[in-house]
Image (cartoon, rainbow, N blue to C red; front, side, top):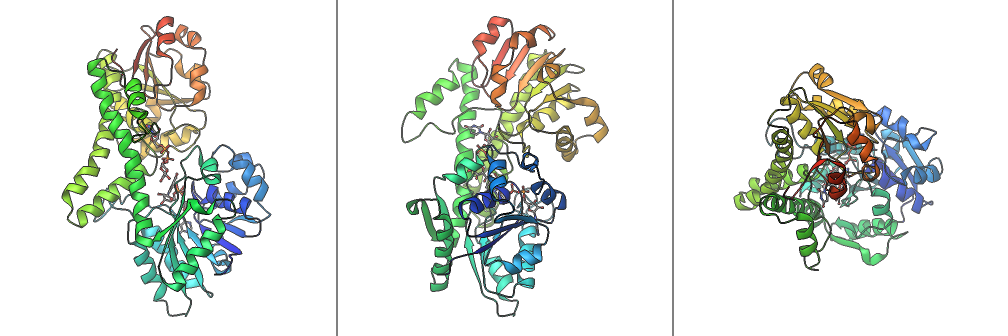
Length: 466
Ligand code: NAD
Ligand code: UGA
């Protein structure tokens, strides 16, 4: 086994950036270079003020400040970094395909393949290639085929090391993960490569939390972990609809079932629906893979998690329309939150986008406040759907830097993200400046409904009969 002294990571996104920053912090003896073809992104990672790095994560700017320039580097010189590294992490995006076969279901592996071809082209010494991106099971076979047929005598070992961090808690998750998973070949060379990566993580993670498996188990486990997590949310959201009809309270039901240690209390928070760049993409991928093996029942089973989530987002939006007397045309609705969860500036697949889209179709005016999301991102998210012209989105949506201004003169407020600050607002002041009857649709069940009702608000929460 060789001790790794130089690591390169291709992809400086929400995973590559934080993961490598933490490896660099915990392993000062290893040189870590994060490369990306996106120049603006690399420039932001190199911003002298680490508060301006492109990924907002609590604690991350401190980690970057400590390691950057010492043994952590961000660069667009991809070839040089590949050539210099003994171990290369591939942490590029693997979105759902938007064209051709598998459109809307399978993972688009073009960025992965480009990385493999680039590594094959420039490498002059043996390397360990680590799949950090989330990939369909058996992708290592594709990488191997590309890497091993270059004919320049360079030897590659391929490992799978999926990332389990959640956004908003990335630094915490990376400092103290439930487990690290490393899959590799059970050959002498493969086992040596596995041990090299184990050694990197063992600088701060207890060995018993570093699991090793074969490559295929590791690749598949990542998709399965996300599918299980998302399935819990769709399960509790399905029950939330039943609660709304029966005077059962979803918060009480979640507490009651969550105390069973076999079920557990985490990930049982009913909501407007899960978002984020991965749950939907990874489940669609699992469904697609299952279908491609002819496993119809398996595919249908997991697809239901997505169907339920789409239903929950639509149901929330339609509930707003229904409660505003079946018409929101010309009515102002404030959105508190646009990010897909609190403590992140990431909006990918955020439920807010789909709720806004439906309300805009009903000709509502949407007034958005989010503590970390830039207005241009809000418009880009809506434009990406191509439901209407960008000018129409710009017309129908206004973004605010002050939540009180966003809520002023509105008919209703919808809570789309569970930012803590929403709980401590001066709700009397907000009420006084709204049109009456003042309505709140709490898509995250974070507000104190009893207190708001005492002020005069009409409150609708998820999974609670009103
Ligand atoms: P991202 O879009 O934030 O970052 C990917 C980066 O890769 C981009 O900056 C892009 O410019 C760069 N890139 C793409 N192709 C490149 C190439 N050929 N050369 C150089 N740079 C290239 O994506 P992300 O959120 O960091 O996710 C990356 C992977 O990690 C995905 O497979 C995702 O499923 C997985 N993942 C994400 C999370 C998360 O919380 N976001 C968690 C676990 C796993
Ligand atoms: C998720 C997983 O939690 C990570 O382990 C995984 O690495 C990552 O996906 C990935 O592969 O990308 P993330 O999407 O960042 O992480 O955030 P989560 O905390 O899982 O939240 C996902 C969505 O579910 C959010 O919209 C959140 O608000 C929602 N959610 C979560 C609920 O509605 N209810 C819950 O009880 C929990």
